[in-house]
Length: 403
Ligand code: NDP
Image 1 (cartoon, rainbow, N blue to C red):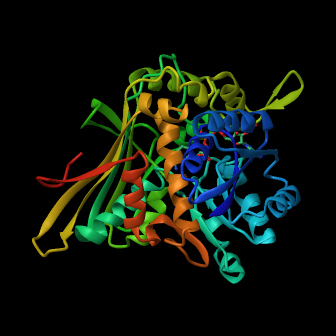
Image 2 (cartoon, rainbow, N blue to C red):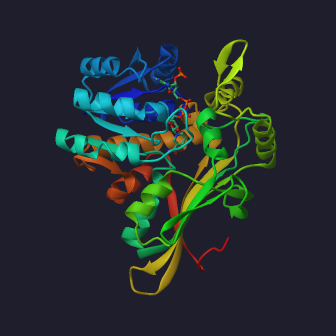
Image 3 (cartoon, rainbow, N blue to C red):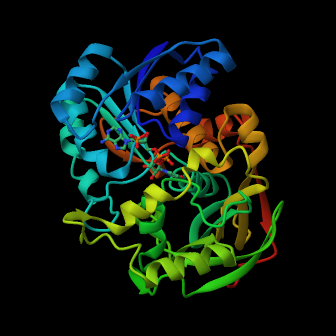
């Protein structure tokens, strides 16, 4: 029985709060705060309608550390769940340290003026969380999050070592819009337009954004083009699975998405450098994000499935030589919408945020300091995925997949 304070009121938060409300034995008291209080209120109204449970709501600018500290002291939560944007990670961690409460997020810190998402800023908090006897769990979404748990589960149950790893993220959903992103547009476009990077023989190999692609036949979706990208779990996987010879991340994009993005990039609309517009400084990407459809508005029209998983090759635990396993989840956009009022990209992130929170609140995952998902026992998390809407399956493949 625990009190939780969730920060941020977008699609991911909406799913996480609905799922927390459905698990009253763990989340007995739910508080939700964000920059725009009306968004918290509409999540609270939907939760009340669907589950009968109350969610207390507040307005907060999470970058104002003293205000965050006051809110935490007022609510007295056992855990602060950061589902706002990556820019707020450090101020929220500062507030947690000052108000003495544990922390969880789904995306690593990114400075506003540089599209560079790396863990080192948050890893630098380890000693302070440790000394305070608090836990911070980083990246408890799907990717990062479940993809790391899948990898560690394979290492615990199937493979003694993992030589090569490919993470495959396919969104086969069609939202009916000419161009839209399935999570925060600013964060999404910063991620997609950054150079690709993968881990190979102990170093990072950088290639131009969206240049290397492969075709893969995704169950439940069909054949899709997947593009090599950098994604933040590659950094923690390279650290916590040190024997990895190669680790890559692939994400699918349709031709229409690529065409729109290419044009927007070519005309400078994806830039994060401020420009003068009618005497004011504006950031083109922020302006673009403001005119694009809000991710939470896509739920009603999105049809199709997501299929996200990892393919790992390495030495089998049972000594039977080299083996390859594929472990993945398929999630249906319409089912996700019916259950929580949000499409599957928010659902596949919000459910693991709820499960990571449950792991911490029930003590199944514990520790003093800052932790990544790879450092935890995958089994209780994997059990909850099956029980709370993200069932997974594992199969042995004939051999390594070469692409
Ligand atoms: P949204 O943009 O829909 O929601 C973000 C929310 O944060 C909004 O309610 C916004 O408020 C709020 N917010 C922004 N700035 C502040 C601030 N200074 N103080 C308080 N609240 C603030 O994003 P999503 O729900 O799509 O994504 C949420 C997080 O999940 C992001 O960090 C994203 O990177 C991460 N994510 C992780 C994934 C994973 O698999 N690990 C996958 C997808 C997303 P306002 O309404 O006023 O704008």
